[in-house]
Image 1 (cartoon, rainbow, N blue to C red):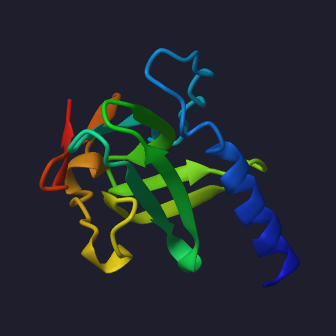
Image 2 (cartoon, helix red, strand yellow):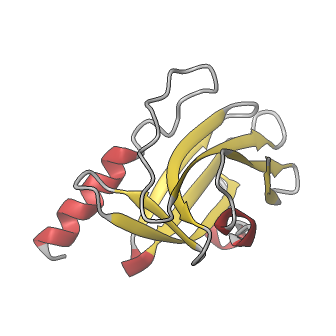
Length: 146
């Protein structure tokens, strides 16, 4: 891996290090939006069977993935995203301030094989300009809800 990509990946991972925070935790302010981008706080909520932890992968352009979880039943994790509704772009900022494009999000039971995880359509997320929740239920069908 080239040094610049390695640094960018480490910066992205550092930016989501607090992803396991609970709903009651203090959150840093969202980044200031610019150029038609909106700051959108995404809360991932585990509403699957008690005792089953949820895990998610945020798949970025250039084959990088950010792991989120485990998220225990009834708990949440948070990601701060940038959304540009006009173009449909979704991104996460790395530490240097580069927008890393989000291509997909996949979630499933932590102990389940990754190929069984579900990927909610990002179409709803691409149009948002305010906070939203990715609610994952017993059939591990995750959907965006206001």
